[in-house]
Image (cartoon, rainbow over all chains, first blue to last red; front, side, top):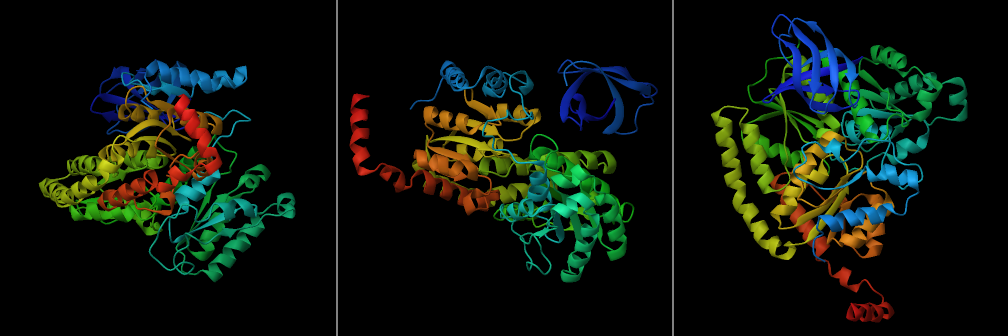
Length: 73
Length: 490
């Protein structure tokens, strides 16, 4: 589990992990609606993380705990 | 002396790697690459922010250097206490020439060194009492300081002193902010973690101080982040922003003050110059205070114009007009400088090995002078820095991460650049090799290099170095003949 920060850029969501200074684009997010947001997220570098599905944050950037499922660090 | 093509450059890297033992070779190979502009993600071809190979001459610093020397040192009214043995404090004092306006030792403390001078007994019995006493003494001797920061050196972390508790207690006693910074030198692989730790300390101990108590500010408030005022850089940048109609609330951290930090959450845009050392706090402010941030580049007229326009695009038309006005005002000056120096510098090749932002940010300034950057590398960059660098560099140029002394010398010997820009540790090695050299960490005791005024100094300095007649007198008379004979054979 690690803290990550999700931002919005003009190309979509951006993933940032302060601890390891990893910044990458989010290719896909399992749930992306106002009521249910999160789930499995896939990164541009092939990494997969999991955010507990929750109500979408009111504004981004937003810090949240995420679990690493697969991929490079 | 032509430029290397891709195969030659790759062969050169292989040749340099030959000297290492098997394991080190495998490790170092990941840190060297030939630039390929088609790559969008640097991590596929270069590894960075990893521990240096033991036994090589790395040029890196430590977390303490990143915190005390880079981020906290330049704040002028914050006394940075080097908590630990005396050496670290002494060697991190004033070396970067972070200019400030104020009276040294009265209301400004950038070039004064404060250290708790740890001795054996402090390691045995703990140094917290000594720190408390030191803070009292500092308060008595320098009452006009506005805040203190405690920069811990290695032993503090090893013996487990509680500097946070002392800081909290003393802050309440003296009524000033006291920031404990856990920047022990052994943390992380380079000074980069020191920047991160400092950013986090500012986030936790200073920024929230005025939450809810700040006034609205003007719609044109901005803050300069990551400009350390080396030789007056931040001033040369600030006047441009003010001239285009913006209100610069804070300078982080060159010539900055604690009040400026506390006022930063009211700005409308954070301007980030050194991405590597201050992006953390910019990201935090984006999340907590909803302040957007952008990177800009104030080296060389083309990049300055580009950056001014990009900054202005975040504001209304008055600022956009202001930006155009500023660019139009300075362009004739810049044209004159380029007309003067470009003929003398055109086609010269540069190799850079610096830290922070310079290997990519100065490329534009060199190109304005008709020079070409053929190799660039960082001491402590992360992958996101290389992502940005690959775009700026030409194809088939060398990129090296955490280069060793041997690698640098070998690259310079083979690529034969006309100018090397690096730090003080490399300066004399290259002087002895007869290669013109600029110390690009603190502008070789010159500066400023940022902004339009800075470009004038930059162009002059590069000309002064590259075209210095001393380089032709480098060989002793009895060696001269040998050289000529060699040249004939070749």
